[in-house]
Image (cartoon, rainbow, N blue to C red; front, side, top):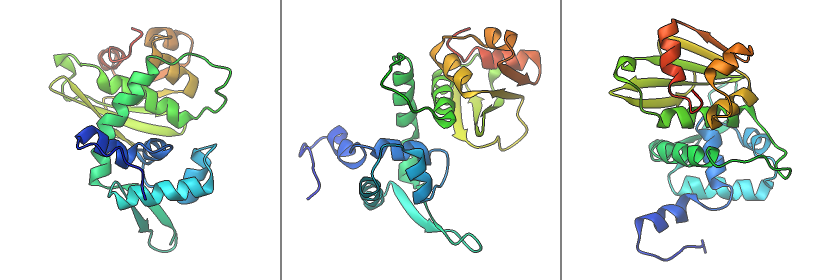
Length: 217
């Protein structure tokens, strides 16, 4: 029988569904798009095959993810977020940003991924309030092999994984460690530019507006 808090409460019900150990990290990986079982095993060092299989079954049963078989020639099964799962994106981003602001170097942490650095920068910039002159802006950000984009509307920043759906006003490229430094405020965009760690392709005004979304200005 599945474990449950047994509380008649929305929060406890949500935690029953998606907060079992490793489940939020499975959802983290699927924020970037569909993935095969083997992709998830590789992306989640430390998880056992039985645990991953159990989490996938539970999340699928809860309607948060779905399993789909790709058409030939791939013909392999992938897992992806459902509409209900995608509705968790703001929650996952807020939790990521909350954690990023409190992260400290630790000798116990040895696993590092460009995707997680991209997520950190995505989460922190998506929390920022943009100025009125940024309305309509679309930024594309590439952190090594991972890409996401940010759209600004009425001062709110909305992000999604993958390339921008239309030409971006600014294209941002950086490496994983610089992305983390930008997300935590340990390095400003100006400082990263001066050291050749950050590349901005677009008008200077758009670069300034994107830079204003970063903590270390």
